[in-house]
Image (cartoon, rainbow, N blue to C red):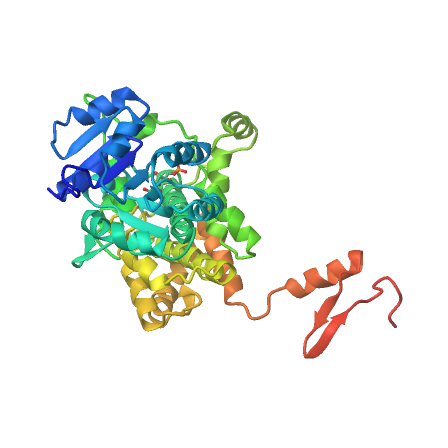
Length: 476
Ligand code: 6PG
């Protein structure tokens, strides 16, 4: 067991919920003596009931802090928002200058910037760190995205390196950049997570209502896909969900779950920030919107009674070939979702001077996190070839595979439209792509309209300057 300064403990955790407790156990497994604190004494008791010498839970913040060696390393895993500020305020009363505070929650990056600056001025080291992988990740190896105080990162690096998931013998943790870089990267990770989850649920909709497949058949398809190029954590858990029945039940638990999706805000923030930066990420936007639409159950129920539902089956002669088209469509949309998220990181780098290394981001997302997937290896390779790659669509190897999947996405989106199956994320991935590869978008008309009704002016091809026209005046 690694104990510093005699009997003192090497790592402190505030917030002993599932994530905090699991991460602490993971750290203890790697030989570090740990302390935990929570205002909820039941959680403290639960931690102490683990009966491990290397972990001690405290109900008193002073005792907790006293148990730590110097410089103290205190990580918070508490709900994002005001609670984080409250905990920091309390900590400042008991910590010493030079101590390290880590915020491991899903904090809004603007808050992280503010906290970083405030704590730096007071002489404390602050790290804003995205932690991904859920309960299991925290316990066995998460992916971690720390940002902020570089000096402090060097101190905590040995611990993080040991507790992270490992891919090809390398840990899925790396310093992301200054200030809120870590929390920004985690926010975009979650935006991509929303997009992928939406795409999987639309796939389910096509399989269930478009092709009228049974749950067991859907399970088999997800199982098969997860053995190929679509292999990913999210498909893996989806496959398992399509096999899960409660004891004695004849049907899937999934079929008893309300169709109203909740969210905690990271997806919405991703969309809001992207809009502020004028950087299009429409698959993430639509994923956020569809979660919101799902909450309007009463309205949806009413509308379903007045608008007839399409009843036909998309592919009457259900065939392997159609599932191949669907697989290609999913591949196309999945690539597009990652591409949009990475594009946002590229843009944020310019806007916020994070100096993010996108290859490094892809590298630490390959394991431990929720969006880990086979395709992240391709993304990693793309940035290895060109560290300054502006967009994944432009990468040669990705282009080659994407082109082959275009017939699939066109088939699926057009069939879904014809048969009234809602696939907004698939559709928007195609629309985004078709405009992306369009040298001449119809935006010239928008400029003419803006100038017509508001004298907003326009620019001309091959001519410097801005122009305005009195559109209503006769011109011949
Ligand atoms: C992760 C997850 C995690 C959290 C999601 C859920 O990377 O481990 O992203 O951070 O479970 O943020 O978010 P919603 O409640 O908004 O779906």
